[in-house]
Image (cartoon, rainbow, N blue to C red; front, side, top):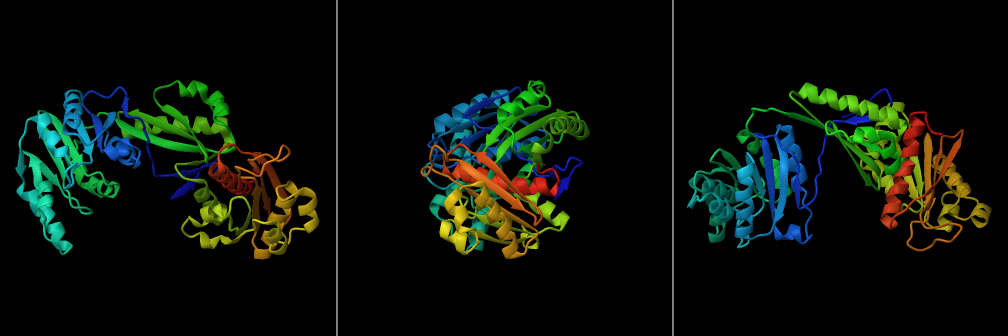
Length: 441
């Protein structure tokens, strides 16, 4: 659910934490720190994206367990075993993802056995879980699938209701080892079971939020927040994307209320300094615009050129958007702008399709055509070709009409074709947001 604070900034309850790099080390709490090993040569080669770590880091922190190290390693027993041995010396818990399947390169269990000195045994409960899952699918167990029922001695199998391979929970010399399959959907589903094995003796609680900004470059935000950026708690990290700049705030405390209070204090200070450039907390622009349109009881239609329907797509990504989105038109050519939208031929000839005047007529005419409260428009040069010294690649005009007035804004966006289109669509939606908040300049 989205709520709006006094400054008109949308608040969203979901959170995320993204940490990248092959090996990242921070200062962990002594007894509640964990490490994550991501197993898979396909991750190292870039064939697949590692989304498991961001999920695990978030969920572990929700349990009060800080992640001190994350490592990505290939499908070799000796490599997995070596890193596991090292991490078990320094960390209270190690979570391993991947390498639990039936194929020859699934060697995580062998690596755990080598690192701990525990033998692999045929685990009756694990085999039963696998057999039950296969029976549900009307299949019989293959010899290769029996491998998934071989676990290090003393392990407890973690049920997998999405895939076949059970996870592993193992307590060894005062440490916890949790091994999960590498399929993201399986990890997400299994997390409810994993939580049962996590200690509830927390000594630190975490809260984090992502404030999203549009219209200010990262350098300017850095200047406005530089005294806050040097603090370690709450910690602030700036990340530039095609949708703007994300400001990640992360706080910790001895109780949930202390952590939340520290986060809220910094969050309010950031909003105070950046004003209405902050458009949301933990959600995207289309969700914010959709909620504002509902709250204000307004409808909208869209005329697009360079974005090719991306603005309409974003608006309709939001469930319930039929309450406010009337329709959209992709008028890519001059002919379609003239014949479908009614843009004057003389305007197109004199000013060109990428111009303030054409953008203005597109916004006015699409509003009339669909009989909506608002009409939004965008026209530009996404590239990589088509630019001139007078009208370079990245030139974009965005427009908005409410029937009484038309606003048109000029932008020069950098980046490749997709990035220009993404930024253009974001700029259109931001105009709508600022209009609904009565701050459109």
